[in-house]
Image (cartoon, rainbow, N blue to C red; front, top):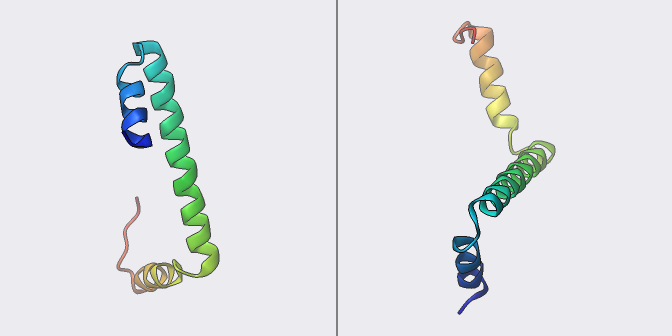
Length: 66
């Protein structure tokens, strides 16, 4: 049995209260990792082309208020 399979079995067998806490922790971890990925993409310049395109559309009047 792989580690992942072991974790899946343990999570499946958690009581509801513990599962809810675990699920919250997973969501927070996922959000933190996503934030770090966006930060890394931003500082590395990977998002520059998207920002440039958005600014160009705004300057042309091709955007609308949210």
